[in-house]
Image (tube, rainbow, N blue to C red):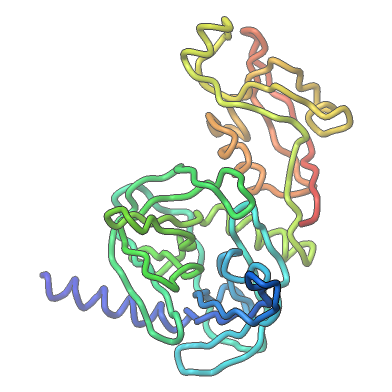
Length: 305
C-alpha cells in the first residue's frame, strides 16, 4: 500500500514538474557608494496558458531582464504582461511553450499537497498538507495578503512555483516562508490567481476591482461596545462620493455580511468575492442596517495596475 502511494506521488511530481520553470532576473542596483551594478535573482514559475507563465511578483519586481528555463534546459526571454502586487502575482509571456497546469479551487485543510520549484533547473519537490486557510501576511506593497498555510517545506528559489493537490491541479502559488519557524510556508490561493487571469484574458491587463468603500471586520467586543445589530460581518466606515457603493445605496454604519450569497467576515474575503467576478460585473451585497436586512446589487468598478 505504501509503495503504491509512494509511486503515485513520484509520478505526480514528475508529471507536474514538466510545467514548472526556473525564472532568472537581472536588475540594476546601487551599492553603498551609489555605484550601479547588476544583481541577479532566482525564482520559479509555471505554465498556465499557452506561452504564459505565472510567478510571484516579488520574484520579478524591478527586473530589467527576465529569462525562463524549462526542465529540458530550453531558455527564452520573457516579458511581464500583467501584475497584481497587492497579492504578489505576476504573469509573464514568452516564446517558450510547455504544457500548462490546471487551476482548482477545490481544497480544504488537511489535503495533501506538493510544493514544486525549479530554481536554476534543480527540481525541488516537498510534500505536506494544507495547514490553514484565510491567513494574512504582509504583501510586497505593505498591505494584508490573503494566503493559505502549508507545512510543505518552501526551499530557497521556490517562490513563484505551484502548490498542487493530488490531482496535479494548482491550488496556490508559493509566496513566502518563515525561515526560523518549523516548516511553515504560505501560498496565494487559486481564487486570486483566477482573478488575474480572468482580467488579463478579457482586457489584456489586470484591472483591480473595487467598490469605493472602506470596511472593517466586526467582532463581539465591537458589537457590544457600539451596540451593533450583529457581531460578524464588515462595518462600512468610509464611502467615496462617486463610487459603486454610494450609487447602490450603501451607507456608513451598514454591516455587509454576505457577497453573492457567501459569508464575508473580513475585508480580504470581500476582495476575493470581487476578484471572482471582476471589473464591470455585478455583485450582490447582503446588508444589515440597524436590524433591517436587505440586498443591493452594484456594478464593480476597477483601476489598472
